[in-house]
Image 1 (cartoon, rainbow over the protein chains, first blue to last red):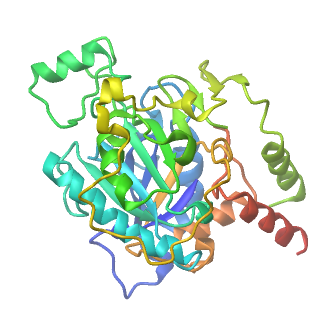
Image 2 (image 1 turned 180 degrees about the horizontal axis):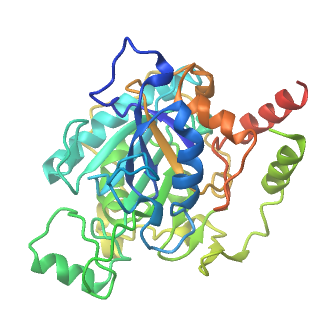
Length: 245
Length: 144
């Protein structure tokens, strides 16, 4: 899936340069990897060497081999780094497709922020502290007649979801981690085995501001859905090997 | 997109598989289609999550615009096409031209152009998840 987003352009952005030369950043999900230095001319390389080899919605929870280094090299022109977030909330904001998306996205973001702040999990665009929740506006994903659409990607091990193993919980308790700090244990309490990215994407629709509290408390933090029959459009769970399609 | 690629994508869309299909992936993992909205993710349960887990927020002061109207009756679950990866392109903006692939000089435009002639090996390579958009693209390209 391809979305334009309100993730800020890199500081190196020079507005006077031709737009084709502007490098930008891509956040690739489910790997939860930031890929830098992406230009239109570099797309064939990005698609074949990175996106084509990355973990997907159905691949088992192992790190993406193509994204496992953040060192640039002639064969790997794109510096990569893990996104600091434990989860991301994506809100369609594209007014040119439907006024309802343009209207609802800022309202929902305000409510999500209000419920994330007391938990220490709210992250604005400049906040790179690990383990929090980023909220991004994205372009049309379909289904604007069911506005508002909300997509939630949760890192493996984030929050207190039922899929976390007891070993993960014990490891986090031992390290004093709290409030969704990301740990990369492999489920058996062993040493970190690498960044496996998102284990779930939960795609909701018909979301209203009064739903935001429950979505933070249960869906973002625990991977549970409050109104599945009314609001769940679909998604995937790589830990359970389930998809909605 | 060549006609054969377009037809293959259309066939993939229309023939999404039986409701409870299981598929073995190239990495040896097995993927099962959840047939009901309660089969994919756990649902909140008052016995576990507290009596107010199904209640809406009472301190919410934000309101949707007056006259807010959406479809309230369609069955939602299982209607979205599958996707393999999701790429978010940083643009620094919150609104774009109607079709983001028409943003001149953008990475979205370049990816769309690449997709016309290529497909990825790692499974479903749909980018735009709106079936109406997909078919509009097929009709547009086949008439060129």
